[in-house]
Length: 288
Image (cartoon, rainbow, N blue to C red; front, top):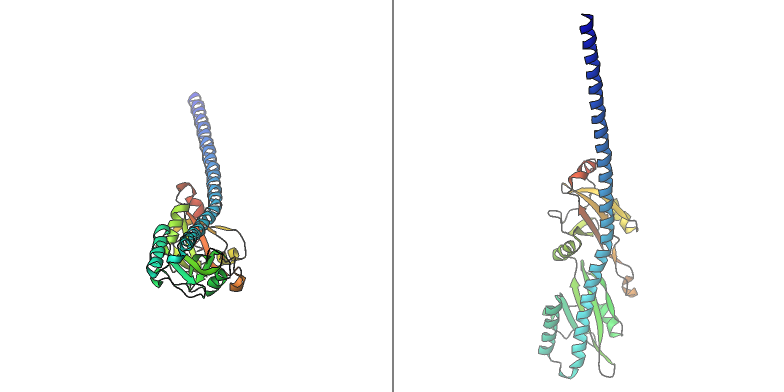
């Protein structure tokens, strides 16, 4: 009997030892998984943050390209007009404006005489930036962004000259950037969602269902306006995002129009759709 009891005790001890080893292996494997998972989460979030920072350069590149397009359009009109200055007729002006709009896909072409009177047909565009026209007729060149009746435009203006370099007119060209099509193009260009804010309202956005809504955490916009780099996790329309609010888009030229006047704010967002970072974001409440 005592031999049987001793054998049972040995079996029990062996079983307990094996069970302890299995449990230790399981705990070690689980701990290793948790640590690795957390490191992977952190690495992926860091990569997302780095990529969203880099998209700042992409946004600037895209915006510069728009200004470059309207500048090329105004220069085309200038060179063509000056080359045929003795043959300028209403039909010629209509053809020239139509050609510029077609080639460069711009919104408005307006040609003025030396007295700031628009001589091109307003069906191709009507310019209301009187100070831009005045600056160009005084020999200045304008290439910048302007807020026109609540809409943001890329604007280019150049003087029209005779062979003797006498200013006889001006051409002003605009391309709207505060539009749904613009944010869609910019979103496709960057691979991220894009929003243009008017104050705290999403005036234009590539995020479905969010146009016209206000940002909940208004401090994000305020901090960006103050020059702070803002990168933050957020829940927008029930989806998880990593958000970056960029500095305001400002006018940099005509001092008499008010230099550095803010004309719009940008926000870009990277959709966080990877399963491995979902748990981290579940702890983030809605902040936009």
